[in-house]
Image (cartoon, rainbow, N blue to C red; front, top):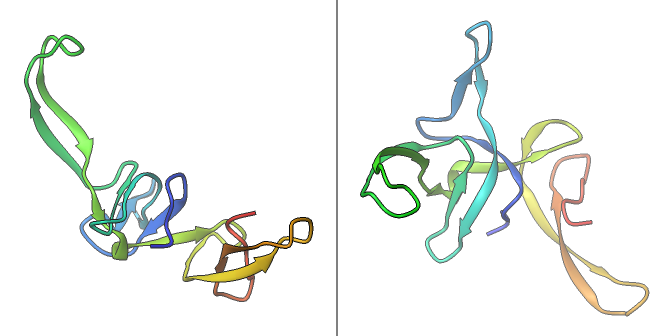
Length: 120
């Protein structure tokens, strides 16, 4: 899985694929990844796949009630957002050798013409 917490992603499939802008035109939904579940290949994206949960009263929330929160969606339904072009891109792994230590490390690279490096 090439998506990490904190990445900005574009939703490419599902009920939250588009949101309406101020004029009412559909635009692709983007959001920040809050949590990643690699074992189940799911991610939680801010503002996407909102569900209502019935919460019992606790000391932290003495009233309880119905709370709206984000539910996980499959990682295949999102793509990383390239900040240079502001478009969704496929991601590849590039092995780069660190000149100081001589050790190699993996970085995520956009597979479009910009070759943007996500892990700098």
